[in-house]
Image (cartoon, rainbow, N blue to C red; front, side, top):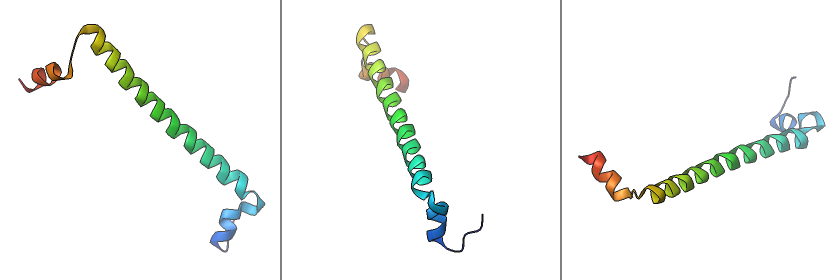
Length: 65
């Protein structure tokens, strides 16, 4: 396809709302998934440290020694 202006490019031959809306929804879903995975990872680390009695201070002392 050949577009003569940026407005024609964003309009996508009348399907611009569908095309750019699809990109936006996909981006939001991927960003949300990354956020939820990182949140779950932090929660699991916290639960693991509570179960095993490991504290962040102890871990920091071990890595600096």
